[in-house]
Image 1 (cartoon, rainbow, N blue to C red):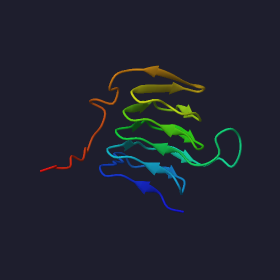
Image 2 (image 1 turned 60 degrees about the horizontal axis):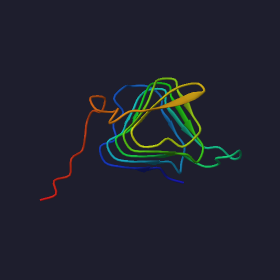
Image 3 (image 1 turned 135 degrees about the horizontal axis):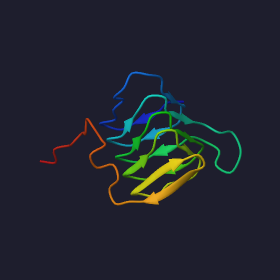
Length: 118
């Protein structure tokens, strides 16, 4: 099983990151040290996470199961996410809570890939 990773994905800090085979990661995501994108075999969301575009995943955050993380989502450090997250949200805590916020990843993302459409 392979990981599908979009353009502009950036790992800015040295340190372990666990990404289970079968995960999908959109474009222009930043994934920091200690992050786990993991598989679950059972429960209400078995499978691997799908991460949208322009997502920031903070240090030591965990995203598990066949969940969908929308576009422009900021996952705070140490958050534990095992449910779908809508676009334009901040996720924080354990258990995690969603806070709607317009463009929460603005000024957090680095190494953005911009495709010239000309």
